[in-house]
Image 1 (tube, protein in one colour):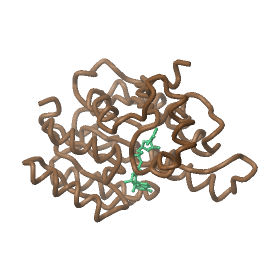
Image 2 (cartoon, helix red, strand yellow):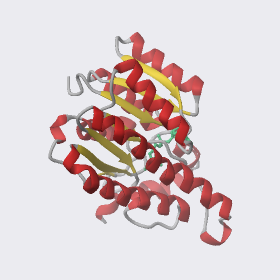
Image 3 (cartoon, helix red, strand yellow):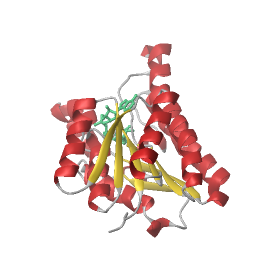
Image 4 (tube, protein in one colour):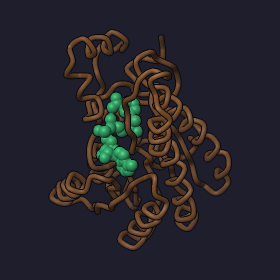
Length: 250
Ligand code: NAD
């Protein structure tokens, strides 16, 4: 098993890509802490993993709260003994053009998508140091690499921030055996994209921009995250793993 003996904390693990990563990590032998604001969904992923013989626990986590992060990392250590892997996956989407964006819209998305990754990283580092090293995987987006006309300024700015926060983390902690990499998914079938996928014109517009001609599946991202979490990627840090159906190749 590719993650045997590892303890992983996944933010936003209650649904979408985070839940796919939680299930896959557990199948590969990891003990998983599912951190999310959605308690019922998170507990249901926990129950599903346990029913299949895996190990998981739900932790109430709002990624904008430093004390919630401290509690989630403490749960990893008290339940499973240590923390080896952090997936900063929680995020929110939406928004519109710059002139229609309020300061509150901007601040909220930066708080969840960018500050949340900073707080998670900051809190996990001490635990990873105690564990002798670790792997931090930050979920950015293809829109953290290139601009587009049909996303919002705050989404793209927040995902761009995640990309370079990852490189800063990689450089500052490499000598302590703590790696950090960013993952850049393109459009994926999750609750976040549900509304756009349900609108035929929007769906067609998105598909026309994806060279592979379809939305990706959560597991197609989860397998990339699994690689970065495992020791197979021991020499990989500060890198960008693009899983976008070819969006950024154009
Ligand atoms: P999703 O909306 O299906 O799931 C996101 C999860 O994050 C939810 O469980 C939600 O409750 C949780 N979350 C939101 N705010 C939170 C907070 N403050 N604290 C803790 N948890 C919180 O979204 P998804 O599509 O699975 O997205 C996962 C990540 O991938 C996000 O960072 C998203 O920006 C990124 N991403 C998504 C796509 C896509 O097309 N779906 C593409 C590129 C990047």
